[in-house]
Amino acid sequence: MSHPQTHRALILDQIGQPLRVDNAYPTPQPTPGSAIVRILAAATLSYSREIYNGNRKYNLSTPCVPGNGAIGRVVALGADATTLQEGDLVLIDIFVRGRDNHRACALSGVHDGHSGPAKRMMHGEWRDGTYAEYAKLPLENCFVLDERRLLGSPSTDSIYAAATAQGEIGLGYTVEDLLHAASYLVPFGGLRDVGLGVSETVLVSPATGMFGSAAVHVALAMGANVIAMGRNTDALEKLKADVVAGGQGHHIHTVAITNNIEQEMSAIAQIGLPVDVYFDISPPAAAGATYTKSGILSLRQGGRVSLMGGMGSDVSIPINAVVQRSLALKGKWMYEREDVVRLIHMVESGRLRLGKKGIIGRFGLEQWKQAFDAAAEQSGPGQMAVIVP
Ligand SMILES: NC(=O)c1ccc[n+]([C@@H]2O[C@H](COP(=O)([O-])OP(=O)(O)OC[C@H]3O[C@@H](n4cnc5c(N)ncnc54)[C@H](OP(=O)(O)O)[C@@H]3O)[C@@H](O)[C@H]2O)c1
Image (cartoon, rainbow, N blue to C red; front, side):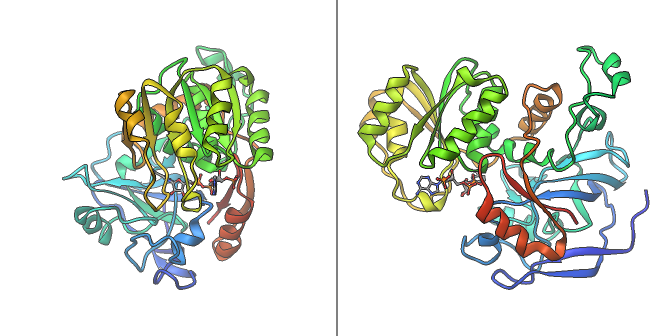
């Protein structure tokens, strides 16, 4: 497939400066180990504007093209590609790992990582993200999607239905719907990291944000029971209603965050399920909240904790309970490559359903500010503002 010499890209000259669109940005050329992808839709975060205006104090080499997880079509490949084909629809994973050091990892267009080697990697080849018409990615960060299955019409694709072992038909997603898979990946990484098992119970807190609500859906698809905690009871009810509509209502319970540890623990205990895993995905705004303690103190003997949140300040840990109940605490940044493969299989099989009404707006590159404002102000369970370059 052909691609132009130049293209349109959003540029971040420096953290804290307004972004700008470059209408003649040089289009990257394929080199060994890379793919060039035409970006069809890219995700935003509720805190995208805080990353680029400097409030979040993220490390990011500039100038660069910012970005996030995206869906695109491969237009050119390095000569060493083995399986990817031009024209493939792919999920773009922006979590880049050093090829000579897998511990060096960073997020293209978002964060240069937490080590010198990661920063070195991001200064050069992989600094540009997906808020552009074209992006260059490591081959291994492009995951082929079964386009016919995912985008095929549920009612008309009977040829495909006959061809699949299960007799199933298309899932009827839009390209933008598929971006939710990128947000599901984050909690999937943490839940797999602590070995969440079938019929176990996971307490998710807070459960009403993008990644918290994703954790609820992913945990249910993994066969677990979920106790969803949140301070916004309307948002909790909406989340529960989505789960009920998906036929999983008997596996979800909700508990209000009240910042009263005894009250929260009592509400969790009343549900009557032993809690195997506490999954924490707190934002910095929740610094000082006490639900992390309620969550840890509600765990059964031998329970596990997955800490994925970015509270940004230290959290008080009930050390006696950790010792006496032999609890395991694990932190997790993002996920493993194998997790991406598995999650895509879960989506393609229909085991993990992506929301179909979760797009709060589609924004062109020039509308980056509106996109980030919408993401910050209107996000809720399963809601996302999308950049369509
Ligand atoms: N470890 C990783 O790899 C990784 C990856 C991505 C993100 N993260 C972290 O995950 C965090 C959450 O991301 P997100 O996209 O889900 O954010 P989000 O969509 O903005 O959701 C934030 C959640 O926090 C809740 N919240 C805010 N202030 C609170 C408070 N004072 N007390 C209790 N709950 C409060 C919100 O509840 P309301 O509905 O009540 O407002 C909402 O449920 C990010 O800030 C980031 O640091 C970690």
